[in-house]
Image (spheres, helix red, strand yellow):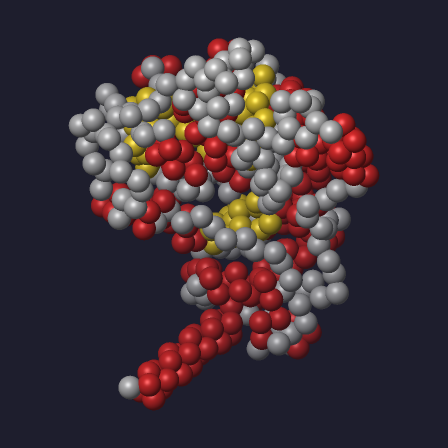
Length: 433
């Protein structure tokens, strides 16, 4: 056992972060209050009569380097609207990476298309472009590329693939506002870039979403879908095409405008913290940060993601490692599962679809080692910790080092607790019987 002063918190030591608080999230100040007051006093609380949401979308588009922005309800329905606007529908296939939030795939189901799950690069955790090309069939209409945790997918290779195979490219940028690839903002390399402003995102109004695009026709189609199928300024009850109501409120627009004002400074701070961690963690065996392509000029760090090698931690499981870090006061998120492991897909638990002769996908038979491995071995550290002062950020390194130095003792403890739980449950079962 290490001296008491260096005993990890999970073994009854003093936590590395004892008495210290991480920066709050979400963050706000008088700018949000003023924006909400403007909306309140204006009496125009919907996007149709106000200006905040549309102004916000235009400001986001400009920030990313695109021509048009569309303010929508959330980052799930943005993908749905993008697919619909691109003409993706019944019988079509949409290629998506298996290591992502489920909405990337269910957006395809929402427009009656089939999501085709492909593997991810085990280092970057973004879509494996070779796997995507191998999955292309004569039914494939689109690829949704996810910039996971703010790390950009290989946009050069994806753009080339979509051009050669005549496919639509949609970028899921929910984690990546501000990420730049070859000095261009992500979201502008395909037909659409999709963004989310849910409570945990880097820019947030609790909920909300946006699309960006350079194509005016696509912008009009996506907005028509989001505005109940209306077209242009025709009669308000003239619905020229199918649509839904995906419009953002003015309240969200006002909050998001204020959030975007302070975001460039937050973006810089998180980047600096990530670089500091990259350098300091390089000396810890078994810990490897998520890989970044050198063509990515700026990364929006949605989560600081680590690859964890249990062999370098005395066989300590990933889950036990996370538990030990939480005991030290770190904020540890929950990794995505590989989508092929979800009951939703394994048991095809979605509404009946017409399919028009499309082959049924047996998701339960898929083997996707990159995505499955990432689900089992990555550790996600929350982005608000990266807004702290540099010495506070280094508490992350201190905590990981402490856990590694005591990994064998922690492993024995967690194994002992698991055995105790098994014995207690067994005894309880005997009593009930």
